[in-house]
Length: 333
Length: 97
Image 1 (cartoon, chains in turn yellow, green):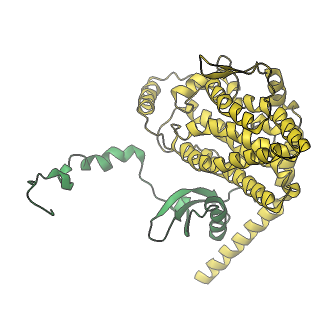
Image 2 (cartoon, one colour):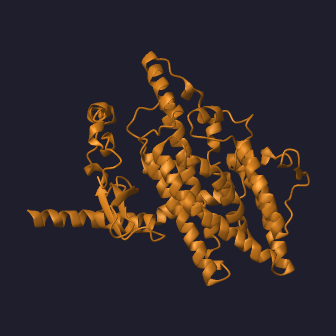
């Protein structure tokens, strides 16, 4: 999740011929196999670096774009407390983006470069954020399902082989739990409310269920770069394993709410101790990924507008800093 | 003026969680000056009362050892186990030593 673009990496990144590179790579892999962390200044294969830059920056972009569907409800949250909670959550997402851009920068790419790629529409972010949030219940469903799926994916990333990424993920995971619980509580409140409120919660579940399952990315058979990422211990579990775990955890939570998971094929497999679920419509995922989702254009436009409208603040900050520095200099002279 | 979104210096942030503890490195951020670094560190790293004090240090001012020198720097300490108290065998009867 957050990394779906990895599946369209260039072929060139897994090819290295020189013999000494081969030896370095062997030693690198041995360190990874021994569960040693890789740190920014140590040697790493170019493909490892590029894979991480792509994955971490996509993750960072997802956090930043992820502020938009929820920000949409800040002014209309149903109470002052809900408004405060939502502001805190959206602020967390911005913070997560900042931690992740910092982690990516340790790999020799600048934050400005990465943000530039996002604004130019060249970078990918999780396609889940290209869906709209038409009702308050969508805010509940996002916290419960989208953040729930994110946690499922992010907990193993806390043990990722790259130190700065793993450390950022530890911080993020600590905060993410609040996101999921506040979302579930919104759903709980609505599903114990009036029939129209319960129906609103059901509709939100209907909208977010399948996109949430798609967040784990293509199935293992289709995911070309999973195997290498597993060898490098960037990834610890396959997309399908994590998706299954998410379904197993989430279906009972939906039952507790008294809501129906929108999947007629869903059933409990007693022998396997897993829920079996219906086939995912990947053509929809592909469409959203290609930019034809309900809100792709709107999201990027909102980011660009925020960037442009904030320019005067950045200019003023730089002007102030250089003025202060000049004053400091003349005082010292 | 050049595009001022570029080239904001990087600061490393250290937070003291409670009085009496060390400042601990928590991450980095970009800021135009030290004051902004402190203000952003407040928003970024202490949203849940994680700290009572912040240090911000320009990343470019940090001098670090080279990982390639790790052996030369740290290997000499490896065979000096006698620097640890557990190296010495003291009879059980001897107390408070």
